Structures are given as structure tokens and as C-alpha cells.
Image (cartoon, rainbow, N blue to C red; front, side, top):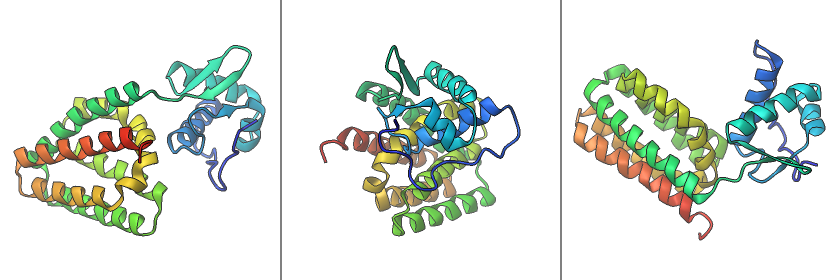
Length: 225
């Protein structure tokens, strides 16, 4: 069985067009990313199918794909389980994220216009509101949009493609520490906006490197706090 069930309202609706197996895959990946399905949780095809309102076949296909991508572990004679990332896996990915995001901040400082700065300020305000309301899911989602916007402002398609490949896992690792990082994370975002707005490439690079390193250290310290 699902060891803890799913939170009320956690199951996304499968309304988007496209093959059913792809929509089921996206729904399950979102549930894993947001930790509605927790690392180590047993995933039962029939229960997931019931939650999503589909047959077991697209669920089985989605679980196989998620296994291939490292999100789910298929254990012989036991079934499917949400992958439990090791500290080394998290460290490697968050280190790569630091490299990508620091370069994005530098390029954003060189290229961003007033509309881009305004977009960052609006997202920062939304993130601060989410933190004030203790809306962890909202803070995580807004944090992801904030960093994605900086990546867009960087104007480097290859960099953006590489960042997109790690974005889902960054959200996965950030979710359990979002409340801990809380207001401080958005203070750091404000400083980043100031550096980007001032076209200070070196400062933007340094601030983003420090910001993402704070997240990496917070993730590793989460079980000791």
C-alpha cells in the first residue's frame, strides 16, 4: 500500500493533451518532486491508478520510465519505491547547479533589461508572501520560477538546456529545506536582483554562488538540525 497516502488535493488532474502514459508520467513525477510521494515510499500500481483515475497499464509504463531516469527503484519481488537519494547524489547535482546558476547570474547582469528586472522583483514579492503565509509549496514553486527567470535573462540557450535537466531534482532537494531557508533565501534573492539591475557581473556571480552553496549546505545539514 501507499505507506502514508497522498495529501488532500495533491493528485494533479490529467487534463493536458497527449498520450495518457506521458500524462501519468508527468503527474507521478510532480508528486515525487513535491514530495507528496516521499523518498522510500512504496508505490502500488493499483492504488496510483485509482488516485489518478486510470488503468494500471499507463501507471506501469510510467513507473518503468521513472525507474530508467532514477526517480523510482524497481525491486524484484517487492515492487516500486520512490528513490532515496544519497548524500553524494545530492551533493554532485547541487554542485553542478551552482556552476550553472553562477554563470546565468553573470550573463543576466550583462543582458537584463528593465522588464526582466521587474519580473524578478514581482517573483521575489510573491516568494516573500509565500514564506510569510508558511506556504512551502508556493515558496518552492516561486523559487523555481525565480531561478528560471534569471536563466532566461542570461540569454544562453545551451546553458538553459543544461539547467532544465537538473531543475526537477533541484526542486526535489529544495522542498525539505524550504521552510528552514525561509526568509533568508528571499533576502539573498533581493541582493541578487540589485546586482543584476546594477549590471555588476562579478557581484551577481559571487552572490549566486553563495546563495546556491547555502542551499547545498542546508540540505546536508537538514538531518542534524
